[in-house]
Image (spheres, protein in one colour):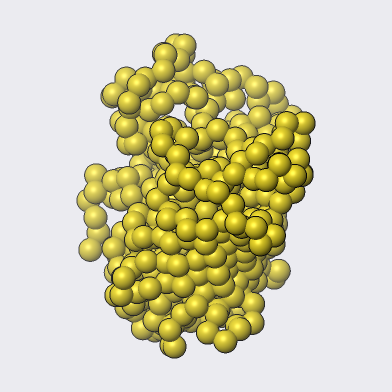
Length: 453
Ligand SMILES: [Zn+2]
């Protein structure tokens, strides 16, 4: 069944990537660079028992920091050790909530530490359980003891102890199992909010993508058989070819997986995506309804491999991805399909104008609603990409996007990084366009003051 236009707009800009309002806390003094996790999901109790070995580096070496803060207030941390020594830990209240772990004097002067944590996580919006499956969703600090913010980048190893017959999926590449433990490893640092895992009694299809240098494709489902998974994810290989050509860089993992779940999930994670049946099932009747596969796959480059350094530049993740979904539509379905995507972007933008809340893309203030924040970061961000394409022309624009992607792969980015990369490939001065869309109010008036929630 085809959704009505307003319904579709809500599905696309209201449900996809439920991330935009995550708070960005201040910089952690001890920052987690690598997490080695041993996790045991309990499907009956809907809890997760875990041990974490966290490799920390001191961010302000000149000042001894005698405690480590873990921004995970919902975790029940039961023990913290440093080289076998039990450390004092306590819950913090207030805006800096989470846990504080006190370090012995000699450790506070070090530049690196390896901390052992034992903890328990409860089901919640970051850790979702079904009767026979579990998956993490964006809010990493609800299942991972976070030494840093959601945007901090870290590498990870995950070992999952699972019942017989359970399959798994996690950030990075699969390593050989050890007993009942299924193991995954990601060597490149990715933003914490993109790290995750899923496990359950999944059906699975895995195949060569046919795209040179790019990952294999895996389709997993909770309640779909392998034939249905193949049918629903049919456009994946052609999309991978399209996006990888535009990005000009191979994804660093050997497999890109998509897990089809009940409900309305549409979430990117590093090296996989969670996709709800409500989002994807229309594709069986209307093959043009392929946006959710495209959107989440595009995030593997724009959002994951390159990710905004601050939430104010979230449009670099979502605006580029929304535009790339439209570019895919034009490539696969033609000009009319592209124009329809542009129509959706204009409607999103109109929502912000109607509310008197047209803001520059990198506006640093708070938004009065998630809907308005998305109107700017998704719709206006994508319209800015369209404006750049029209201003620069096809050749320069795609060369610029490829340059941006290649130069900043594996890093956190800001608007200025994007501007410099695009400018490097353009004969025209792009500064006025960036000034108009990114830094000033697009309506021409100065941005208004901060709006309190
Ligand atoms: Zn998105």
